[in-house]
Length: 252
Image (tube, rainbow, N blue to C red; front, side, top):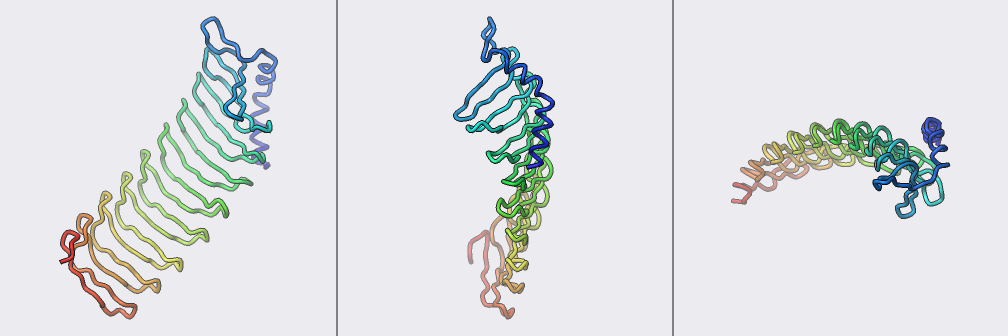
């Protein structure tokens, strides 16, 4: 609550004079050319927005309100395009989103929050394209659910998923948006469940599957996304129980 109160007070303090002045003027006026000018009040469903137009383009600070009259969103415009910070406020008065724009494109840190200010997601944009770290959190606990990295709008590098109690579930690696390199999944006790490899989104190389105890269950390999060669299944005592041979994904 303190967080949103600070932001609102700061922004309202900066623009209170301008808002108060425009509020006293006549609203929703156009000039001889039909262009919107001055103070305007707009309604979209149950949301009311107030701000200023200059030559038909939104300019300066715009405020939107919930149906009950509480502040819902604060955003800034320059020459009709979103510019700088925009924040959303839920019906309880908590900050629910923080966004940064440059010439109407996402540019900077984007964050979403649940009730009480707990984070839901954090990601960064550069000129409208997702770039760098991306984190997603569980809504009920606030614990990290996913952490991945982006380059030019595509996943690139390591990506990890976690259970609601913080244990690793999946570790993937990406290159230019495609699975690439070692890929791991885990049991709830933390032991590896599967271990496989990809190149440019195609499964290749060794494949290992494990029992929850950590002992090997299945071994085999992939060639160009197809099972190939001998695949061997083991029991938990380490004894081979079945051997199957594949060629281009077809059992021989």
